[in-house]
Length: 282
Image (cartoon, rainbow, N blue to C red; front, side, top):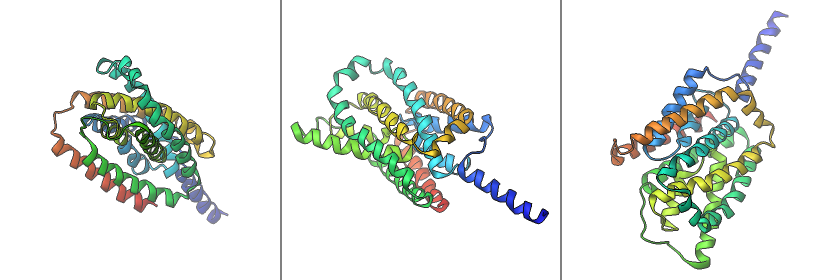
């Protein structure tokens, strides 16, 4: 009798850990992890969700799909908080003036977010780990070569610009949903290079596109059983999200303190190393 009970409890423990249904880490590590990730993102003007995902999968031991959903929940909070904070730099009137650009990208990103979340829920856990690992490398490349991009004018015009915007939006929506990120690391270079937006304006426009895109992805995830992980880990999500906001605020004030020529390769390397670990996780 006792010999049977030991493997049974061990099996239950493993299942609980795999499903991410444990009560979550204590508040202090959650806040500290969120603050560190937020600060890393804030140093380059991003929310840091791409760095938070490997942290959720690795040290905090959430399964791939649960990590993506939790990352999406925290990204929603961070982006919703960031838009009003940026109003001092870029007023809402400037964002509203560029509504055609926002709608152009949303036409693709909303559809992409829905499909991306749907694909994530249908993939096997092993495959999702592999997909996330590849996407982390993609984000690392985008950081190295897309960050700080400048353009004097839009790359295309007329119908071609609209078509390119929808296609780019769709791809970004898919990636953002699959990773549970806002997508700023891809949206900002797209806004600058494709639409010729000023870098500061592009940062705010990316948030305006990200928020509805994430809501659509989040809504699609809510139809899956794995979405229960948000309720099961609500304290963890809230504490880490607050930590991320505080960290992003600090990182934003330290912006420019570390030269981008030094910082970006280090951050890209962190993502590449994280991608290897995520790949092996599967």
